[in-house]
Length: 306
Image 1 (cartoon, rainbow, N blue to C red):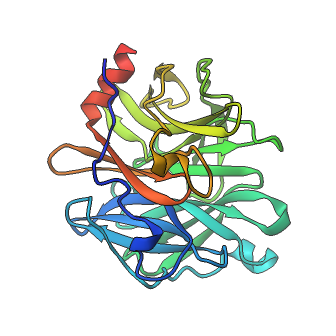
Image 2 (tube, rainbow, N blue to C red):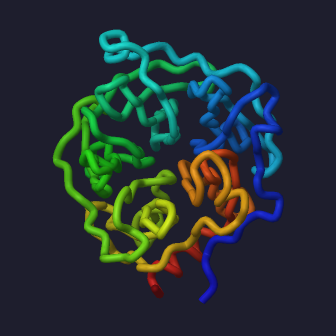
Image 3 (cartoon, rainbow, N blue to C red):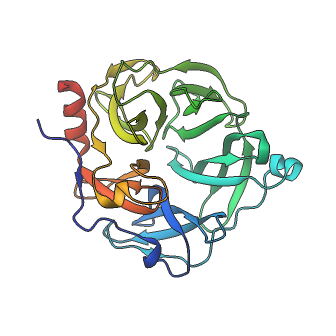
């Protein structure tokens, strides 16, 4: 059975050399459809090692135009108290029935550790902070695209000091206060020893929520990142329906193995195109943006058969 994701021949799609300004890396973009185009919220590291978000748009999901101006995202109440956080790894959710987009991202808060920041936007130019929704240490916050049993639901990855930890599901009535947390208990897998975290926004299917996620495992020389897929219950998403023990993408190509962080494939967003192709956007080696393609049906079939 072939793997359900295939790398695009144009990879990498966006490199630092392609950007309209000088930068060190471009990676780990949130992805959505906006005004008929694919929109990416790129994590861009400038040459002073500071992190910024820039919008890129595309008619075909392959050839992107990058806005040279970073987004307008004021400090949250938490940041006004402790100082600006280092924000990175956006996820974008359009919640069913709402006229706004909600973004979650990691927020490294100086020496306090990493939490989850969130904001809302309607135009992807101006963002209104909604505050920090977790204490350290937590990251990989991903909001489901519709309410579950009348509540907002999110995935995240609380972690210990050794960066262990896995995916949890939590619920909120207002996107502010979260609780009723339950872990997703993945099966034992050789490519998951630490850092199992949500990637793309969950995709609703008749067989359950399709999750495309990442996990890591050490080799003799590096900590390697992998992508996996699973199906979880539509009403109780902490319950796994099918979770193949084989990965669907591993760092193998030069653009995934050589860069700021070797041997990394890391997704923060996927977009289903009008022709049914699912574009899974991922960072290669924490340095450049890449694309793997499949279909939702192929990924679901892979989960059920594996």
